Length: 380
Image 1: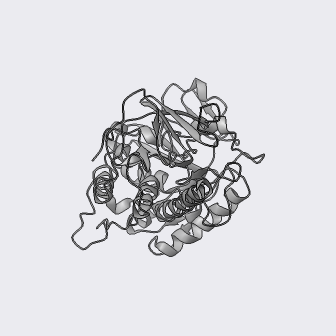
Image 2: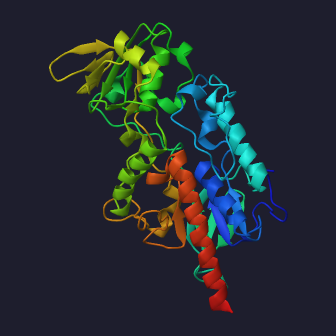
């Protein structure tokens, strides 16, 4: 069920115990954990989501991304995805399959997600009578007040494109991978794909048969790994990102530290030359890109597969950032923001993947439930 919870009126302040912002994989895991702990939608918690329906960022993946090329979708909130079942269709579009799975999670736990809701800012509620120590969540559908917040807004709404000399002079098309609509749009064009992650590899493999030419450029040499991307790879990658977050540094993406899997498709791309990497160019020109040694390549399209940044701007009034530029979290497996323990971040840094998101969502729910019990005990 999605829409307005009973009693929710646009523009009216609502009171609840926990606000969960975002209904992607991490937000759903956290909300299911709250349900598992006995909280009810409405007075116990509310899930606010900016999308028109289930699926989070997966609703917007490019139409040709198939489940066979997705870098692992692990089960969330105890609900079987079925993506690894023998009868699962590997050619099903990810933008259909994953939202369908997220919808099943919402139904299984009766999460009653409120959508679409745009969150503007989260602030202290100390100036609201009777709300000392709580938080207010301001949205385009009213204000929610709660003592605990689980933020699960992910990164999709903040695509990152680095600055390069001459970018403003380029006469062709420059776009981020988020805005890629499919390989047909690249037919007959000279395409430069920038980025060293799995997204760049996927885009190159599907664009190459259509484009007049493709060039792959990255800042660092790609790191390839043998075998499938399994839970062991995922846990190792999460641990590497976790170290940065605990130090208060901006997180690197989990995918950025996993390396690139040598699937049969990738091996074929390497053999054909499509996945022949070149170092990063020095500048962009009106008709292409140029390297320091003077080499120039003409281009019609610059396709930036350069990742995303955490969507945490609405938390700015709480001043959560550390001197290192990131939001520091607690010890391993702890989602608590050190600067403000009322706030938990999931889908951030080490939990920005399905294997990390489910673990973080469960941890956040447990911590919040414990905080609510302590609060009730102090009030008794």
